[in-house]
Image 1 (cartoon, rainbow, N blue to C red):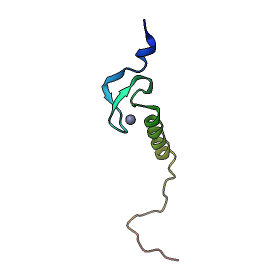
Image 2 (tube, rainbow, N blue to C red; image 1 turned 90 degrees about the horizontal axis):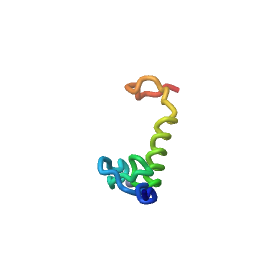
Image 3 (cartoon, helix red, strand yellow; image 1 turned 180 degrees about the horizontal axis):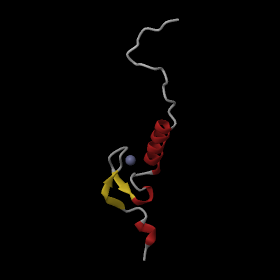
Image 4 (spheres, rainbow, N blue to C red; image 1 turned 90 degrees about the vertical axis):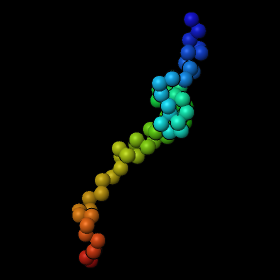
Length: 64
Ligand SMILES: [Zn+2]
């Protein structure tokens, strides 16, 4: 068995959600670690985004 090469065989069933290239096995959904990192960064940004607690969005007038 040559497992060295099986690690880098692109998945036929997946495309990298970041750049659209074929996914590679070591990176699951992604084609490369770079894209995986980008997606992780996006996810973290989304996850840790501070919720805006400014009440109604309809209220454009700000009273001082
Ligand atoms: Zn990619």
